[in-house]
Length: 197
Image (cartoon, rainbow, N blue to C red; front, top):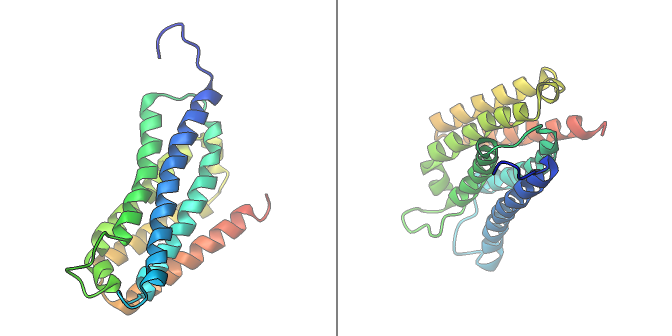
């Protein structure tokens, strides 16, 4: 900022919130458009429980991410590095959405074949979002980070382990177990986190 140009922290937060909401809107639009393809053209591509499950999980994560970022009001001072980090964190979710719903599947037999062939990219980016989540939470203050107790580092560790396993195996049954574990754990985390609020 230019010297002598006063900018309130709340004003900067509003600016950051607008940019994040645009990216979150793009994420949700991408996922909902992808879901709508199956209704519009039910016989064109084979539906995959594995693919749809991760798409639904990602929708839940994005909705939770948007609520989670409300606490950016706790960031005591904004600068361009923090601003850039938060925006890049949101962009990671957009990459995940576009990975799940590519523009075409010409080289694949369906969404399941596509997902399994791109699983390393998907799980690598997903793992990066969990690392970014730790940094993002720390930005909101040490008190906020520690307020979650041991549940938070356990959540991050479990999800990183699931991502590593997802990158490693192409076995459909194992992938379905990973999906189910990740989805149920996230639902459990949301319920326990917000049941008292």
